[in-house]
Length: 93
Image 1 (cartoon, rainbow, N blue to C red):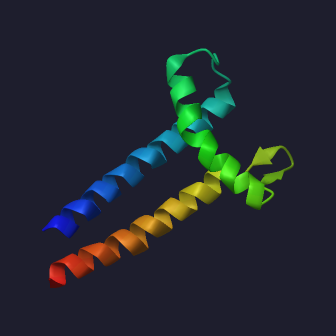
Image 2 (spheres, rainbow, N blue to C red; image 1 turned 45 degrees about the horizontal axis):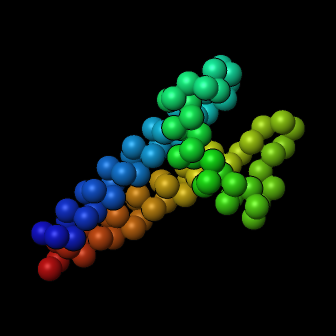
């Protein structure tokens, strides 16, 4: 039961962070007020992960930053592989 709860919490956290990344991508297109609290929160939650990716992989091609897409793909992989693996393991116990 404990592992199942951990898997559910991890799935929810990944979903929420995915929504935050999508919000940040939308914000980058509409150019909102940088002093807006919501914009600052989204930036503070996403930029450390983006900078980690940007240091290891050149992600800017033609003015487009692919770091959010790489992070989203990694989150989908973690959600589909790791979380489902934990759920399968928990159901066998």
